[in-house]
Image (cartoon, one colour):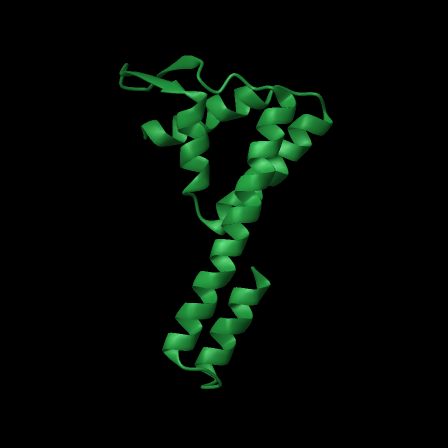
Length: 114
């Protein structure tokens, strides 16, 4: 997020106040999150992904966790901008290669169970 890096630099160089930095940063993040959500929602709709389907993850400790794909979607939406960029790149690559995006969602669920 180059815009935020520039804002940080401006703040550290005393070109802007803390309040202005926070306000502009919040505005940038809201716009980014809205555009990411729109992209992800469109992708899910176009691919007709079964977001209410439930799957099971068995952790190393033999605990069984049950998730819906919608739960993973919600975790994606609250991830950091950097994580979102990586997730988007991975989803685009999987889709380009005609892979199973839901397999990637199940992979992401493993990180939640840790």
